Length: 159
Image (tube, rainbow, N blue to C red; front, top):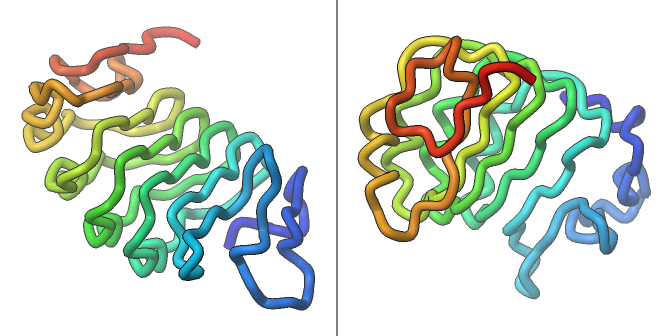
C-alpha cells in the first residue's frame, strides 16, 4: 500500500527471501530483534506513497514508527492503539489528514509524537496533553494553525 517499487532505497523489499527482518541497512529500513520480531520502521524520506495501513496494529513489538518526509495520506489508524511498546511516532511532512486519534494518548511508553506539516485538524486530544506532563516526555509537534494544541512542545506555524 506504500508503493514499494518506487522507494528511494528498497532495503531488499522486493527480494524473494520473504524475511522482512532483512529489509534494512545502516541508514534505515525494518529493524528486528533476534527473535525476528519487528521493533522499528525507519523509512523516512523514502518516497512512500499511500495510506498508513490498519495492519500496522499487528506489529505489537513496534517501538518506533519513523515515516516522515514521504507522501502518506489518509488518517492515522486507530489500530495503532494496539502498539503498547510504541515510544516514537514520526509522521511529519506527509499528507496525513483528519483528527489525531485519542488512542495515542493511552500508549504507555509514547514520548515522541511528530505530526507537523500534514493536513491534520481539530484539537490535540487531552489524553496526549496529559502525557506531556510526564518528566520523560520528549517532543509533541504539530501545525498549530490547524490543530489546537496548548500542550505542544513545538508549534510549526509556517514551514
